[in-house]
Length: 118
Image 1 (cartoon, rainbow, N blue to C red):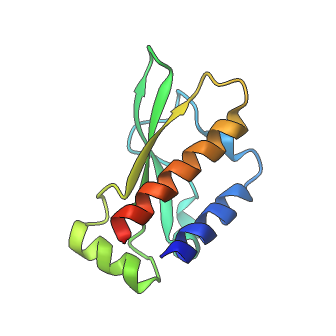
Image 2: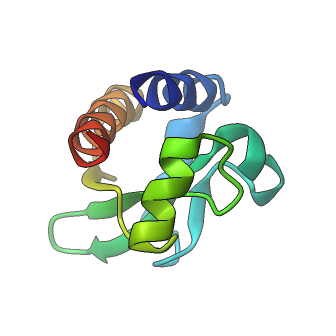
């Protein structure tokens, strides 16, 4: 599982300007990364959660794609449903260095995901 999460992070980090997709205008429950046509390849996705206009924090959710190839991810998704949150974190949309914040959010999502997947 660590390998699957690590591969996901590497692929997401490969997106040019990925941190710029985390904005206050993202609609709750909508996908942020990656696009739907990359579901099978990425196995996981980051969706938008609630945006708090006071703190400028955007909750983000790591979820397992229904097309995941990893047996462990498929098993977890079957037990918990594909819309169950594997991990959550908050992205500060007012951050000066959005890329640094993006890296911290990825790290937090992976850590929580690893703890839930075992």
